Amino acid sequence: MPSSDQPAPKHPELIRVRQLEFICEQDGPLEKILKTKLSDFFARDRSVRCAYLAQIKFGEQTSVALCLNTIFGPDRGLAEKIGNIFKTVFNAKCHMDIIFLNVAQELQIKNVCNAFFPRQP
Image (cartoon, rainbow, N blue to C red; front, side, top):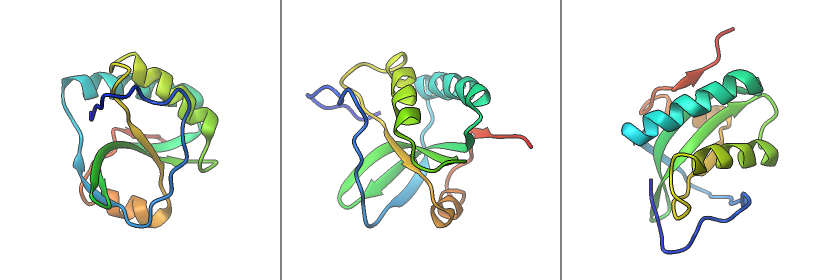
């Protein structure tokens, strides 16, 4: 997960980007812990249909993003809950972007990344 000298914001910030490229799945020992905790949460929350943890590129920046297909679309409350889970695994200087996927983006991400949480019907 990327880190900087500045602590991550306490509340989610909405950022719109024109071009977004999904590079590959983000996976490692800490990411596996995060995925397990998020999967447990999503199983209880019921608003997330599918979740991916991916390296992304937008403009000249690369980052790690939690990419979600949700029932209700972008949800600040859900993002805050996810941020609290993220903080239990990574330090305060790390951040993770959250992307609420549209249909075209989900088709793109499936080419480079497997869902770590696919809701079973």
